[in-house]
Image (tube, rainbow over all chains, first blue to last red; front, top):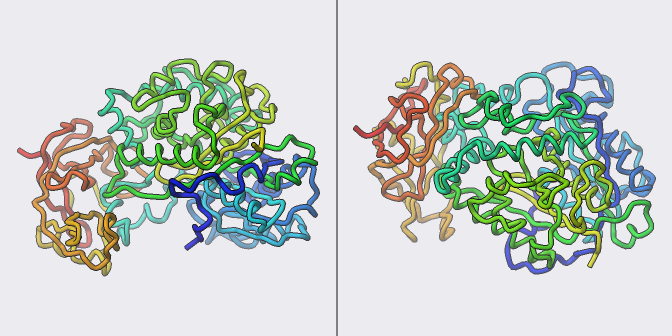
Length: 430
Length: 142
């Protein structure tokens, strides 16, 4: 089991000991495809990871020699390995480089001579970003290259997952698969969404304004899936008449799996001062890791989890949520994003009020630019866009997505209410 | 086999921890772990009590299985092979009357997809899977 003693997963831990002493100084986004075509190696996981990493290093104004830490996650959502299909000529002769991309693989392919800290088993991106900040803060490395690939191979998403094609359900799956439960993010959060609607008298169509605006923001991101391949807005009618997946969930509630990679450079605040980009300082990171009491986590449990995360972010950063300008929580399924919005009470949104907030002005030009990133729903499932937009907004380089309100602090996080990692960014280290 | 036409459920495979639960199902009984230190029921089976942390205080306790429908949705595009031949199919959460903090999954055999009476009482039944293993299900109480 991966180490968790670096996590800030409890309330009452106080200010983060490395608050303002770690900064993000570069980032890079690779090309994005819907799926890997299986033959173009520079569009494979390895190829795209190299592209993103080199862009991040260049964005920071660093050279490969400056990198002394490499951090990544094997949680690439590849669903199945490439085997038993044939592999390719080195370095694409194993899964490493095709469905994941380890620190060792990147060190070798990019020829990074001064790496002293390698971590290939970081969790998914939310906590991975916290791990990276913690590693730099603790001096395990001074300049960390951190990347998160998302892999999408041929075939319908999820249908190739071996567990979904067996006649038997062993282990914990014995209590889920026989009733059709197929994933926590989709099923449990749809259950919670239904409980939310029941409790607050809301309905699925209340998500339409969020979906429409996320696509709008995603189209203001030049590299997004929708900018590249489907460059048009969607309407309320499009949303309401979309293909039903698990009623009432429709296809537009689900972020689109893509094949891509994003990379970030974390370094010390001292080192950051001399680099070409304005540093974006890390004021805190925190994690949630839990499960509900019984088969399905409940609305009450998810609300408690989100409220706890909000308190942890306030305690660790010293900032009140009222002081947070940019807010990019996860939206892999639109059904759970509202728990974050209400749990944090960003812009004063209280329990049961998210749909009303969505129906107000959440455009990037407006007073409540919720999820200026466009999220994964509007961008394609990179998960990293939540973090890269937060960084760009604080740098003032978000282009057509740049908010008109103050952009000096940001919070981004991923994945779901009960399992997530969040990070507070600031233009100032203080 | 399931009362739901076309449904081929993946069959539960018991392990050392869950064997008493599944054996009870084969006898037409629903048993849950109960922590004798704090009198707290657990489902699905756990390694230790999520309240007091005790790992050696569990006993298996039979429950009636009466419950109510909390919420539901309808599976229309399942990723699970055995469900694709049965969709649309209900997916409901059942709360246990004896402890509403315990919930179960159900496809509500006998209730047409989307015609689910949320809040209605349900009764426990058992369905056989393709290995012969029985599993708990619920249907709207008559």
